[in-house]
Length: 229
Image (tube, rainbow, N blue to C red; front, top):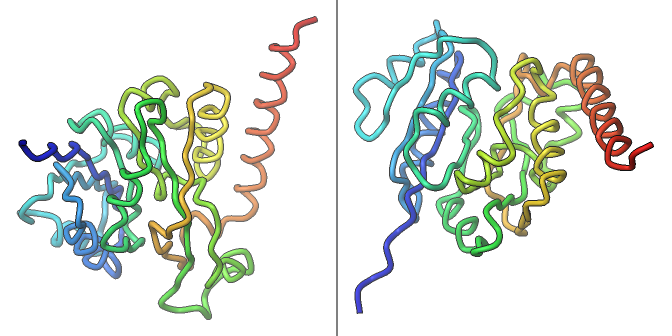
């Protein structure tokens, strides 16, 4: 009996001035017990030496982002990727060695999307916002692309990340996944250790609240249309 073929997983890493954490992130992806078929890093114009870690790195394909913003970077990386399965990894996150394996093990023929748990960590806790500090050492369900493994067909059915949003693009996408009717499995294992740092998008509370309200309004409008007159 021949061995089962490993799934073709593309790991997609948006990068923007992450030289302090990028090497650790890349090594964690490279150590996965379930090996990805490809690793794509898309750089949004780094000026801190991040490109030096990516250029000519074996096993990593480097893209230069033409647009701007995290949603645009993820969409461009998806378009360039070839795998049947997609996993997003932020450049300040750290994956356990079995991160891909435990997520893939939870997939089924009728379930093309899996999320795990997220645990916040920071190299320098003194610079965090109150919202970021509240996430330190706390495990939470990962409704974030960094905790997601998804089949390409499912992602295509839900649609791309909304590039008009900055922080709210993640919430908007998961709302659309829910509305699409596609199943989402949730596993108990931590799949990324989420990097928290000053200046990251997660620290912009004002924008986050504004965009989350916009996403909520879209959801309510969708429900009203479904209900009819």
